Length: 462
Ligand code: SAH
Image (cartoon, rainbow, N blue to C red; front, side, top):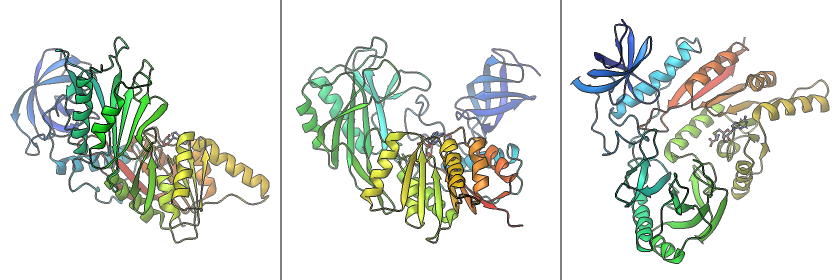
């Protein structure tokens, strides 16, 4: 049956879309309903209709899902950050594990996969070590900070995000206080006028060190010393910086950093490895689950001290340094030069000498290395025992997988933030002499729809 705009439909919500919206079917017609959760029976009004699917507005919950949870955050519905707060955490985990399995089966063509239980968090709140709060004015002209409402740039006042660390509240209160006292204007995206754009914070989960970076449309802050004095009173404060961003675009951070007080970086640890993190460094946002993920990577890599390992898409070398503790030699590859500078500095900081880093595209660096090796060692091929890949959402290039296959590693450990491209790449690898040994989803981002997956792939023995 076809539906039109303004039709009312009654639906059982059976699935959850990529943005957390509930999905139900009415006579074969698929309807996406924001704020409905799996297990609800609802009525929805069709707002937009295509041939086989449409978008509905939630009108009434006829029977609430037994898996509904009361959102902890009062802004959960409007805010663009959390999509799943209305679903119990247990069900969130089930949904994510099902999503990974579904993609691997449908896109990868796998059956009877060796799935390990998803690794969730004991306390799925306050896990984020980084936050970026936009600053603006509300309709009454009052300075506000918080989050953008989903898909817009209007700011919802919220200084107590339940995903961030509790220290954020004190930081935001003090910065806004300073702005009010000295009449410092927030930046206005429409006119490009005003000074303070974002308040950026980072917290060293294992060190307790705090960083505050004020992102400003200018190169100096009036009454800077008063702001520094107020922020320094917060226990753990280690780094107060100014980031200068005069660009008229959506990118949060500019390129220039000025230290206002303390150091430019904070230090944090994952396991036994320390990392120095500046405002511009990439760093995993959920430190507890990162440790879980990297421990799994170490388990899957099965290192005994003699192995040569490649860590492709290595970022600031976090996985590389973690594995270097147990391997003979690790080579990391990353496209962003500043991240490689961080990787090298962090290797030195930890006295790690058996890791080397290359700047470039994984799909160019590895094939070039392979060809170069063959040219210098006639009759021999470059080998690796273990190759780790952790690509962005689009997954790996076929050229890269071809080279991986030529290098014949015993094990490939695939860390993925998009199970659809993961499934595609696993299929390609498995058609070329490899097999999937273990799959483990890891919940790096509770309350959101995202899920990370780690897979152990082995060379077929026969
Ligand atoms: N493994 C790291 C980061 C993974 S995020 C960690 O655990 O922290 C993916 C990384 O891949 C990003 O740092 C991104 O800059 C990098 N990247 C994106 N495309 C790339 C490419 N074609 N070749 C190499 N690195 C790439």
